[in-house]
Length: 468
View 1: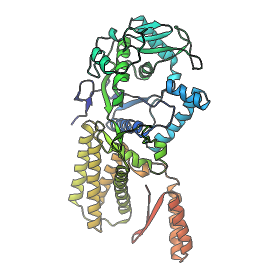
View 2: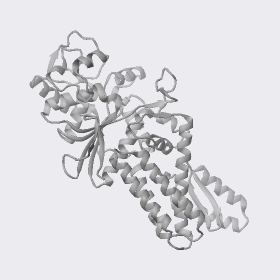
View 3: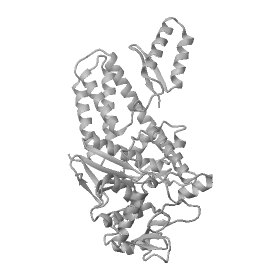
């Protein structure tokens, strides 16, 4: 089947057909870098990383852009509280973002533009909107006139009147309409500013994403992703300003992930349940968190709890252990007869995996296919001393291809020591055991354990694997 995605613009599943054959232009809203990113932020970062990987596995050339918002009210407030500049604050938490994202197995974007590095493009876009009559100036501020765009509300499926009655908007008598939003803000004492045709000031939040998307992906893009909380006003405003500027459709497919809850409550600092990826990494392997975040369909809410994290760890250990057993068997067992049950199960798992991912990036279904393969491998290894090497090899290829898309294997993380170093220490330990030097044998075992390596002595030799 062809890849279909649920398009929030049309509220239905549609076959994915890119604007340019063989290429995908993909934009995802990134973090505001005033703090470490929390697990609610992590969900779209992980999921859209998987979607990008899958598109690449299908042969598409994907240009993946994820921005950094490095100037806004929160940035200014935090910088003032900590006694550093906004730029210094941004540098600190962009570096922290990369550390945490790398730990989660999130591949680097094609481009990670920073809003403050794209001021010229932002000013160009604002000026174009003013020139076309879609924006107006008030005391150095520039506002977008939502009534100038007849389709305003088409993403959230509400009229301007409905949006006004249901939205919390800042009351400002200077605006023509309460829903009008700032494209450019006049400078205030103590705030960073840039020169513009309207005086010194800084960009509004919504225009930043339109400017960066346009610069790096063009006027029209294939996919725009983000959390469902961004549909209104952020993405609604992006559509309005982008399409008024270019006269073209801004985004072909809008994808939004559902909320993440903490023990079935909304995450907030006031409730004391605010969890950053940085904090979780102190006690939990980040791949366990990654697995948890992909374990439900992206459009379904997901509940984070200690139990759900423990379940994710157990599931990931099962996959990891089976993968380790699989590699060890291929290297050490004798070749046996072909097992039609094993080979058939692996073929079915591969088909199921693709069907799941083609059905609106159903990661939960794809993981189910991986477990089908794991179950078949475990049954085969348990029931056969001599192994079906062709069947096991096809299972290895399938699991590694699935991992290249989903990114669940510990082996896909950087190991704390070279494999050759691990093998050398295991060989030294084997010699120590033969010489009955058990003190040295135990010392090597403990050394490997401290570096996240578990070893197991079997009749076929010593094997090792990464611990979660």
